[in-house]
Length: 393
Ligand code: PSV
Ligand code: MN
Image 1 (cartoon, rainbow, N blue to C red):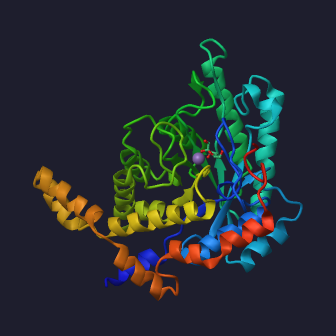
Image 2 (image 1 turned 180 degrees about the horizontal axis):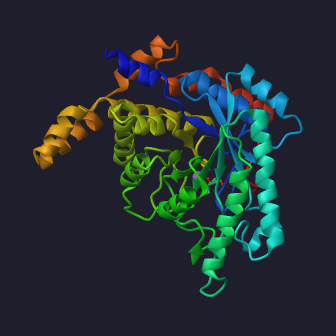
Image 3 (image 1 turned 135 degrees about the vertical axis):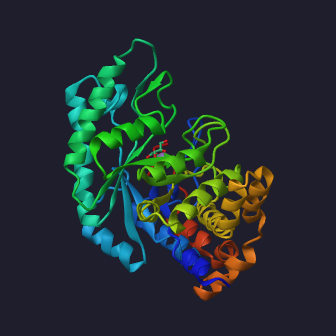
């Protein structure tokens, strides 16, 4: 087997989200999941189980205040003992009563200051947990034409982000996530990658765009966004999931595997190309899952998500990019397409079994999980809770 391919696969890093281990639902109903994590400690334990079985999920993204604890040092140590580090810190400026009309774009300066203060508190948490990324998503927007002044809102967003960026230590980054719509339906303050990018450029180099796969209009070419942001040195990270209609939070790679493959192909080319700056940008991309599973068994869904990323990465690594380039330059439309798709069509499961064996992991992590008794154990110990840490029911 090709050694650099194996090395790349062994060093893949997918971050799982604390909120993916807790009970969650739709606005219609939350079906409590037996054994769903109730506290940040249990979320760490679940993340550790996913990492134990896959070997490529060594960090956990947290959401504040859902995961707030009095003793961050203790949590850090608890996680470390289980092979997990605390990853991106996600402030929550969308669930307090004060945020009815927005947070950093709110018309009232008091509310904006409150939102900024919460995010500054999250930066303090990052210092203790050793997190590199401050991951920002805002529910800010309006529902009706005329409800608020759009340019004023832009200025309020910029001003708030500047205050936050100024407080960010030199070794930390701000990831700015956009979302087409929801919860606001008429106007969203950060609706697309271009808006996020423009704010990032105005802020400084350590402000980077976060691409959540669920946050685009139908048929948007996400790999093209990825290519553009990579080339501009502004792709900071991903929130992986899959959508069919809106922000559906389905398991990444299930409803549009080709899209995920094309995204990975862009990343692999950037990682392995000759352009050093591009390489650095690609190497620093944070690969995070952002999914809340409502009807699926939570751990198994998370395992699938991590493994789907692994499979897709392997396929993208197998493409003959040199031949692809030649076909592109020769104007060979379908020849080029076929070379790229050859990677997508390859069955990489035997290769990944070998990689897992070399890493001392179970050949089939899903089967291993099903046979491990972990799910039964947590169901017994934690019971079936309505609600729990994470999304309120
Ligand atoms: C919003 O839909 C989002 O994608 C943001 O990343 C949040 O932090 C996350 O989901 C959980 O609410
Ligand atoms: Mn997201």
